Length: 83
Image (cartoon, rainbow, N blue to C red; front, side, top):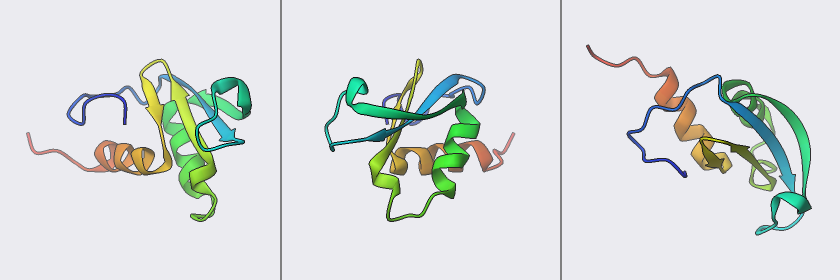
């Protein structure tokens, strides 16, 4: 995950869900699947078949996220914090 694990990331940040044509492909080699808020792109990625998730990544001004990064990000957003 690009940002530090303890950094708060805005759920509404603009994001792009991309399907990579090669493991180390650049953005030009990755097909745009969907655009929208980071939280929606994250849920969309996690709704995909687990075997296919590694073909996708989410890019955003706040960072770039693999499927594993996205799962961690959703966990942080959805886990209540003690005050």
